[in-house]
Image (tube, rainbow, N blue to C red; front, side, top):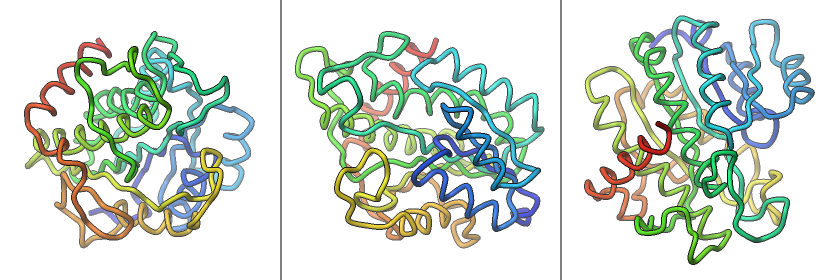
Length: 265
C-alpha cells in the first residue's frame, strides 16, 4: 500500500456523526479526504477543518441522477481513488412520519439511500479504484439485518421502518460478498462492518457506545496493513464475524445484483 499521505479516500455522509469523525481522523493521518454531504454549508464547515487538500461533493443520495453526477465530478477531479467508504444512510425513523416513503426515483427510501446509491457509486468509481493498484471499499452496514424478500423488495405490502432499514443493511453485505468475488485478484478489496452499537448520531435516539469506537473500527478497515488482501468479510466492531446467512447464498446475491443493475439502469 502507498503511504497514507499519498492516499485519497472518499467518504459519503461525511458532514456529521461517524462520517465526520472518520473524515477528521483520516485527514489527521495524512490522507486526502473527499467528503460527500447533502448540505453545502456543513460541507464548507468540514472543509475548513480538513485542510486545503480536501474536496467536497454535494449530492442527495435519494436521487440516482445526483449519484451519477457526483461520480462524474470525482472522476474529473482525481486520477485514482485508494479508498471508498460508503457510510451515508438513514435510520429506522425519518422526518415525515413512520409510513413508507419513496426516493426521487420512486423506490423505497431506505433501500434507495442505504443500499442502491452506494451500489451505483461504487460501480461508477471502480475504474478509479482499480487505477490505484491496491484499493479498499468499506461499506458501513449494521448488525440489524433482515433477509430480503425478493417478492416485495420495495416493501409495498408489509412495510415497517425497522424492516426497511434492516433489509437495506443486509443488502449492503450481500453486495459486499458478491463484489469481493468479482474483484478477486484485482487488488481492490471490499469489506463491510457494523462499526458500533447505537452511537450518538442523528439517527440514534438512545446511544450506548461512542463515536470513537465506531471510528476505530472503521478506520482499521481503511488503514490497517494487516488487512491487505482481506476481502468479502463482515466485521462487528473490531471482530470478524458472520452476517445473516442470506449474505452467503449465491442465488440471493445473484438476484440482488440483477435487480440492482435493472434499477440503476
